Image (cartoon, rainbow, N blue to C red; front, side, top):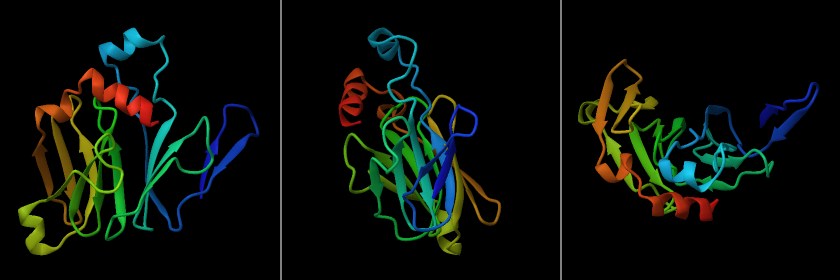
Length: 176
């Protein structure tokens, strides 16, 4: 269960969706794309979206303004999901890392059934180490992962990941 405290004193909302401990939460980064700024006023289209990960081998996407149950449940993981992070510039992309040592790249515009890429650090593969943290560079060109023995790996992303097209933003808006 996820408890979210509202803006009014004494208000608590309950978001129930995981069957195990929640390992991370990440609010959508409010994409600051020029297209978005022209398409609407100052508020973001995605500012109420949140991702959560859990020991229940899943990632959930929530719309905190509209629903108390997940909008989407991604259950194709094969181990604990230890961290999840939205991409800083592409609205439909996020990364998740798991206890098997994989970094999963999801593009919700392409699939809600499976990750578009499943990456493993070659040195971590030999040692079968969990990846327990992930972080995007500010420009979204690189993804860093950290493993259970202190090793950090850096992955370079393709231009289509860090430079979304206007169509990508519109497609994700329609999806949400």
